[in-house]
View 1 (cartoon, chains in turn brown, cyan):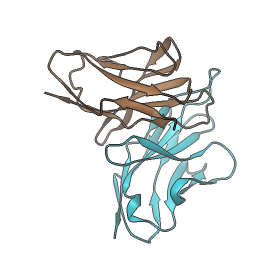
View 2 (view 1 turned 30 degrees about the vertical axis):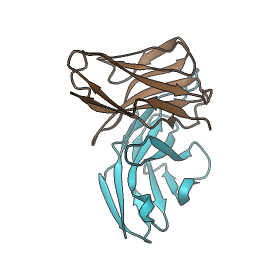
View 3 (view 1 turned 90 degrees about the horizontal axis):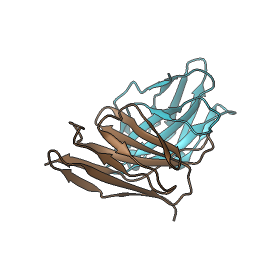
View 4 (view 1 turned 90 degrees about the vertical axis):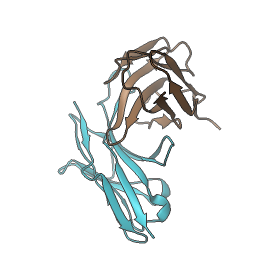
Length: 113
Length: 117
């Protein structure tokens, strides 16, 4: 079955540490997205990529970095500059056609030790 | 910039009763509107979308949504609620189409729906 795989499901970060969240899709989608979900705030866009080797900042990009070296992969690094990283992180992908919905992975929950 | 409002954080409905989850939007141009559902510790699942055409859109699991342009609303409905419908529901609006094709979604803050047996 095609889908989006996020790993790990749970992740713990120590102070001053960078951590990388994995997102892989086998849907052959051009566009990929990273969202952060906090209680009561809905989903906020961190970064998105519409094509390989290109990506744009979303609404809350500070303290995060991404790469898009392959069509199927869009890893997110939470850097030590992100002072409040505890959240549920969701990756999504979609085809280039604008009326198609985004498909989501099952998320990674990041906590601070 | 476009925006979405879900005025109710929590909606409680008795099993078997009709349910409505409200959504209003603000967008320049024609709206592309979506509903998603999220179960605990899971990602979002697509329910339905409005792009153009009939104002009543039918989706997954018996859900439907009514697009009302004059009221800028896109409320989610179901005639008879099931306990398994209990979840977090998100309304979303997409940026107007660009030359590239795919655009960002803006999400509402979510409505927690609880179906009471």
